[in-house]
Image (cartoon, rainbow, N blue to C red):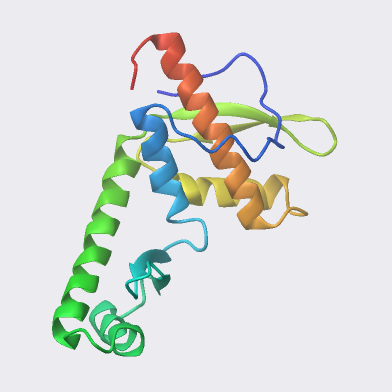
Length: 175
């Protein structure tokens, strides 16, 4: 069941629209933000020194996570037990993927409108249970091919977040 909004949302929004005030808005942010780079790419931040420096451990659906974890640990954390490090990193990847999947499945169906560069109103529809990042990528490729995919998806994410917050205010669900 999609929630429709009355007014079209502009495609270009200010960069400050990144907060998530409601639970489902945060779930949307989590579900999509970890998947913007590629369909199945996951970026896990890893603190590699005591000063707080972080390096992203990046894997995709084709990666041998235990092997990539071992390589990452030996390259970036040579003072840590390699087996323990690789095991913890592999576990973190599995937990993050599980959380991402769970968040994706909790998102309700949602639709909102945006304007293309010609000023035409175009409707985006998120189907409940479908990966919103994949839907946004396809939408951007079809309607905004001149905009870099990552930029377009980030703006679509902010639009979706605003639409979700507006829909929950209208329904009074508070989620």
